Image (tube, rainbow, N blue to C red):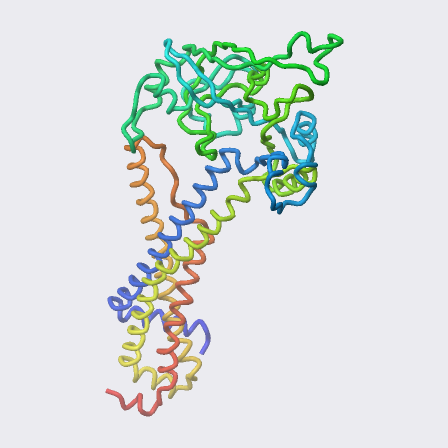
Length: 457
C-alpha cells in the first residue's frame, strides 16, 4: 500500500467512530494543555527575573574591591599577589580599570550615614552617590515621580519611597505597601532638605609649598551643611541587592565627591589619592563581563558580578522547568492510555476489515502503518488543540495575576510566555507519545491471522 492510501484509510476510519476518537483526542489536548500551561509559566517567570536584572544594570556591572580587605584571613583562594602586597583601590587604579577593553565607565561606590533635616526634624539615613549615567541604565528611575538630576553636580536629591514616608510621618502597617507614590511625591517635590555631614579638609599648615598637601600632612574633620532640593521620589530600590547597607537617599556622584565627605574614604591616611571601598565597573556588553572580571583580577583586585550569583538562579529555574514538565506530562501519560484503549477497541471492531486487507495482499507492515497513522493523527490534532488551550490558560492566569497586582498597587508583569520552540516541542511530544501508545495495538493488529479474522463475527 502507498503512504497516501494508508493515510486516507486512517482518516476514514477515524471518522467512523467520531465520538470515541474525539474523546481520546480531547484527552490528549488536555494533557498537552497542562504541559504547555505549566512550562509557559516557568519560562515566563524566568524571563521576568532576567528582565528585571538586565534593566537594573546588574548584568553588565562588575564590582571591584581591594584584596587588602582579606589580609587577615588565613585562606586565600583567589589568584594574584598576597593581600598585603595587592595595590590600593585608589583614583589611579580606577582610571586604569576604566581604560580596560570593554569597560564603559568605572565609578566609586560612595555611601555614608548622615543626618538630613526636613521641617526642622532630623532623620538619620544612608546616602549614596549615583552617576549621571544611572538615568538611562537603571530601571529604578524610569517610573519615578518627579525627574532625575538636572546635571552631574547639582545640589539635588532623589528619595526612596520608604524615606519619603518617614519624612511625611507616614508609617505603613507591617506587611503592607499600599501607599501611592504619587501621594508621597506631591508634598515633597521642589522642597528642600538640609544635609549635615563631616568634611575632610587639609589643614593650612600642612602644605609646605602651597601646591598641595605634603607627606605626613594633617587633616581636619569639619562639620558642614548642604541644602538639597528634592527632585524625585522612586518606588523601586536601585540598591535592593545590598540588603541592610542599601541607601534611601541618592545624590549626584560628582556632588558627593566635591563635598569630600569623611565617610567616603576607607583609608584616612594623610597623603596620597583617595582610596575607595569598591568600584562599580559598567561593561558595554554583558557577554564581556567574565573577560573584564579576569582583567580586574590580573590587576590585583577582587572582582564579582551578578553573573556569578545568577548561576544558582538559572539552576533553580532549570529544576523548576523539569518538575513542571514532569507534572504536566502526567495528564498526557493518562491520555496515552486512552489511545491504547481506543485502538484496541478498533481492532476488535475491525477484525473482518483487517482480514480482508490481508487477503487482498496487505502486509503486516501495511496494517501496522495504518494503526500508527491513526495514532499519529490523534496526536497531531490533540497536540495542536492542546497548545491553543494551554496558551489560553496561561494568558488567563497572567491576566488574573495582573489584576491582583494592580489591586495591590504593584505594576503589572508578564509571568507567562509561549515561545515557538515550546509550541513545536509540545506538538512533537504529543505525536511521539501517541505513536508509542499505538505500538501495542499496531503489533496486535499486524499479528491477526486473516483466516481467523474473516471468520470473526
